[in-house]
Length: 269
Image (cartoon, rainbow, N blue to C red; front, side, top):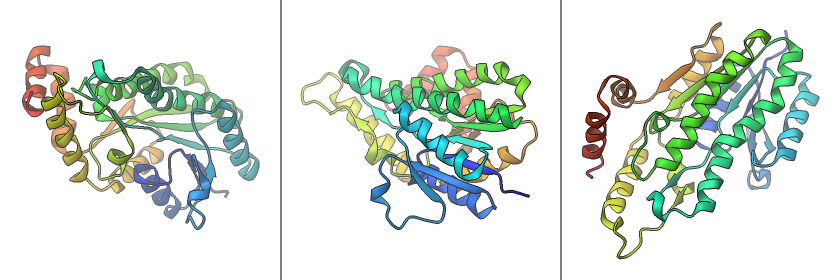
């Protein structure tokens, strides 16, 4: 029996790499993507291919390469994403657009490209890696929250649109994990004399501390494998600390201003 083929975007480091390596060990034929393959000349154990999810041409080429090599593409893990922080008023608009381009439009490009192949196969699975931050508007992370929240909602629509094709689509929202996302994300500069200067710097320090003390990304990989083995995946999955997952539940049941007050207290606003 041929191995199931998995394509994981943004797999050169962090959560994406953890997922790809874990699934490789479980016996899947895994392809990971990165924007610049030349940075990883001796990469292993899975195959790493060139892909910038912001390029429609590279999306087509990457999917074509995998299908050409393997004759199938069973599972897509939409993991590639970027972080962005800053007061919305002071965040350059081109950076806001870039974040949405990667975090929202990129996964949609991938989905649109793989759906015809999966439909022809008669089955498939798409897992969109979102974020617990996508369930709430976090101060100084509003653009990131919005981009991930938008992907959550699109996934809900896609599940219903593709229900007749035996293609399963779901979201997996991680909390804070120990990765290099903080070093790679866009930070709106803390401006001297800005009305946001002190409160933004304090919030930024808190965010970085959360990532530095975050859990091992292997937990996201394990949850991904659980989803893959499920015959009927749920709409939403979350993985993180009990408090991070509980925060989503509280958002559902608490009055808006009460929940807002909790967030402000947490971020010392």
